[in-house]
Length: 288
Image 1: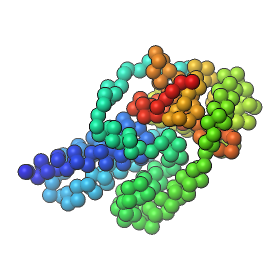
Image 2 (image 1 turned 135 degrees about the vertical axis):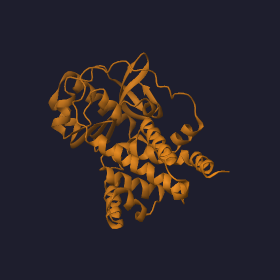
Image 3 (image 1 turned 180 degrees about the horizontal axis):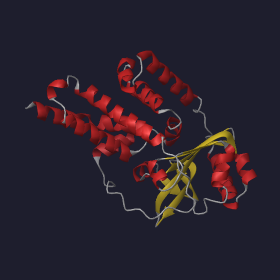
Image 4 (image 1 turned 180 degrees about the vertical axis):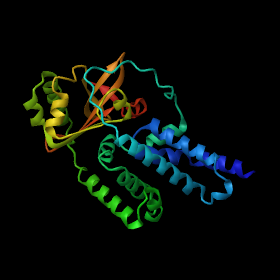
């Protein structure tokens, strides 16, 4: 076997792991696949003699690609859309795929993704690599461009933020009542009613697909989020999103946009607008 064939075979053996790493960092299967593909392209431009530990090399490259993608995503700020988004072409990756199935079976849930989206790119990369994949801080430091101790602090800070959000509302009837009250207040333009349902520090976020449709990447604070939704969401319908109360905008019977909610102490602390087709398929959306 030639050195180039060895690299190719090794990449395929690591593909599922790389997808899992990228998905946890990016929260989108499409972006995760893009990051893994970029790692493959970089591997093909690399001298095989320069790669001693292929698995570690690939994980490092994917992490750096994801870090760049997270930084780019964070820089985008646009207005949330008012009308339903236009019809989109069918996603060509909807067919069954063993590697994709393995990735999805090992993926994090919506609630965790909402929390991870609150982290800075270096925090998210440090936390995911260390706490989820056991990568040493000495290696993480070279990826995020910090010292090992700084990388440790990034992961620790992320861990505290994740831990503080680990007790959301779990009663299904309570979840549904709050989400349906939010929908009614949004449709009716009832600003004060929305404020009563929102935590003062609530954050509404959109994934990259949602931003491409016209959504803001991030809106913070009860007043700003209430202003964003007041008089809108008329096309949305109540739904179960991965078994949790949420909202969905569907077209032709197919979910196009999903709103996931994180609720604590009777108030909405997070709203996650999801437009990525692959991610929506993972969430098991069931309109009510």
